[in-house]
Amino acid sequence: MELNKRQKMIIEITKESGPITGEQIAEKLNVTRATLRPDLAILTMSGFLDARPRVGYYYTGKTQSQLLTDKVKKMTVSAYESIPVVVQESSSAYDAICAMFLEDVGTLFVVNKDSVLTGALSRKDLLRASLGNQDLSTIPVSVIMSRMPNITLCHSDDLVIDVAKLLIERQIDGLPVVKETGKGLEVIGRITKTNITRAFVELAEGEFE
Image (cartoon, rainbow, N blue to C red; front, side, top):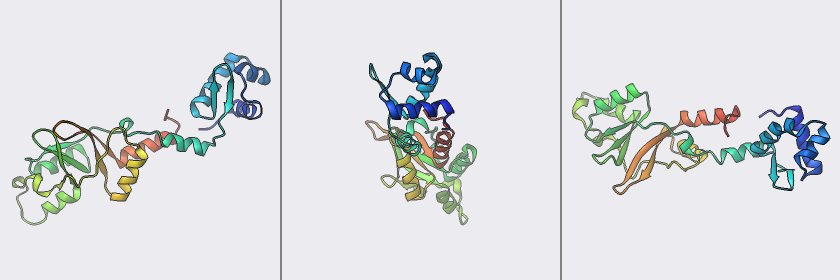
């Protein structure tokens, strides 16, 4: 984020004189406490300053780079996951191709009759199945999918940065977001390279709070 002139002056004052009250900062800048309130709120929420009741504001000592790192380490999957696209084990490879095309996704998640995750289908899996003269409408996805427990997955409270590392390491496009149930793992979302790219773009533009 780009700080304005007054915000930079506030930081310098807290560096030199902190802890210092809002009234004292206002006096040094020759403005009212009310005028300073939005700037102090921004600097505190951004992590440049911290405040202690009855003590005042003080400089945290963190650079913009460190603050950015702190924010990245707090970004969780729950804030950026999207709706999963699932197919049943009994679905045909043809049905899966149609679902992938209509939903415009790179990975489908396969569930059983109890809605428990059993596998995943990538574009490569479906392309491989379509080679030759096979009738795709007669091939169940359970035959061509990657099966559990060989599926890389994540949870809503996982960090986005950790998921990004998994996507790079495993060279895959997306992961199912799951939760534990009495019967197994239920797919509740998906996190993809696109989701993560959007998260970091929002962060760079200062939209992350």
